[in-house]
Length: 202
Image 1 (cartoon, one colour):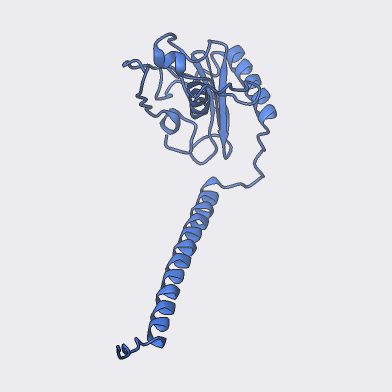
Image 2 (cartoon, helix red, strand yellow):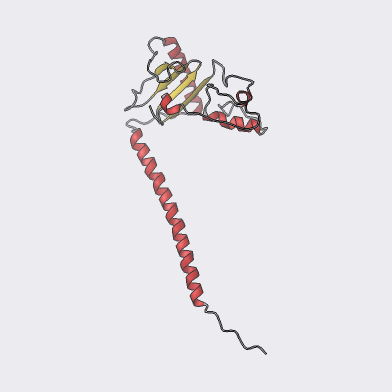
């Protein structure tokens, strides 16, 4: 679909990493933004607390000592404004709120069907139930808050955008106002102190 949704069109993006000890190769391993911090921490020699961070270091992948970042039973989940997804193994559980989604869970084999055109929810009820349980456990652990009745994502995006624009404009006006104030102040002080004529020399 598009950004802000949890369909692949909203979540699948390229990542390019270069630097010392980075193997020149392409990888299709599943990674997320939450993997960036543990990677940088490991490269800096700082130990990551696995109980406080869901991300995994990409260092083995970058150095060519591993082909994947997670095992087949490791789940990765996220949620934004009621849109949610969970990846585990070859499956992706996904839910998008109306008007672009149904608000119901759908299940895809995301690697072989990146366009998410074949919902296998009905065909694989056991897998779907297991992934839904994984998502519920993750949501409870991280504190996902259910959206209130009548929540309109489009309206909230508009409110957020206008708020940010207003804050940016107010900050810019403050800078311009301060600069003008200083210019006026310096101009007045220059007019109040005329240069005195040099005195006679003996």
